Length: 138
Length: 372
Image 1 (cartoon, rainbow over the protein chains, first blue to last red):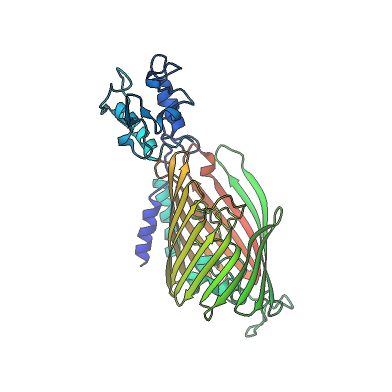
Image 2 (cartoon, one colour):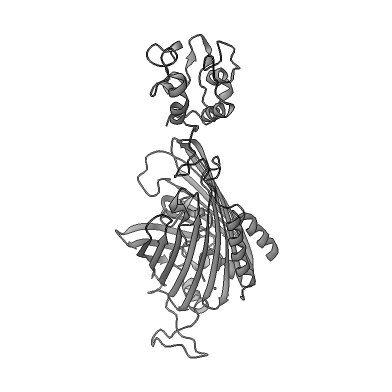
């Protein structure tokens, strides 16, 4: 019995502390995270919300992705070109037009960002994770 | 990781190879084979001791028994009286006072040394013997007094079932003394966590079932219709025990669920405790937060009045984030020289991510625990 307990104890002990690699001081991952704020800072603002694309008052398809505008223009909002295509369906990344456009699996229009370079699979997966988690805005 | 494994192996070797001994909380229940309610007024443990629990601490836990009238060592073969805080058949008092001196060394930061007193006072009123109890648990120091528990408890069915209402510690998991343990912190079920509501329980032979419904606001004002449902199931045998716990707290916007599994085992002079908790919380900034924590503890009774407690803990604060795990090793020697007095000398080493100094602190403490 003691041997079994010893083995179980050692197995637990072997877990060890994390190396902290890729984390900030609070243990939160640095870089792109599955939050709207992080996606805004790391993707929308730097890649999408640029003049002539999805930035400013003349944003393409009315999809303005500047800080403070993204949630209202994405979550449960249909595409003006096809009302059946919802840009972000909370909890369902596969059904979200945004994901389809980023992955290149869309049935309407071009893959985004227009002309590339496209987001990496890892980046898209983080956005999928945000949507899967209900697309929280906080 | 290798350092952690070596340290754990060393601690484990100390536990397994050292000669046999002990004192305290759930491990005492494992050592004696008793249910929590045998030694505590609260059926789920903690707080004021019962008359039996107080007598047990005086007769079986202290290294030496003093004559309460003279303060001298009781003569061999004599049976000195016990004092349990009982005033009469209706009223009984109790108290815990912990005077702690604590040294904490944090890498790349200023070391601290502090005195930290803490005191609780208990009042048990029994208007009807073995049926109705009115109970108060007041944190009286430091700072302003804080009520931790105030409830009325009614026993029925030959004291196999009870219901209580008021403010109480919610029944969940292993209620160990150390509030800083990961399994306590991650579940917010410390002795500073209480809630207002009702609790019912069954005590059927080796089985215990405790279920509560409370506001879920930690004793604060209720702000929604959601409630905290918590449950505790345990099976107690003389040499071992096992239990499960589950709770859910829906606050109107997000759900917080927790599960716990725990066990105790006595092997000779060692009383083992093990527990694991898993928690999910919706509505956080990053969506669903999943956490888990474990604890393994060995309590070695070296001699009457002496207990060596060695503990290993592991904590994953976010299961979706890699390399953020924490662990902690503790070694505490508990010495009870005579009745009502316990000294605790301990060291804890925490290991966390290197960029967070506080997660890698080393703590030394000496505590004088006076109680009745």
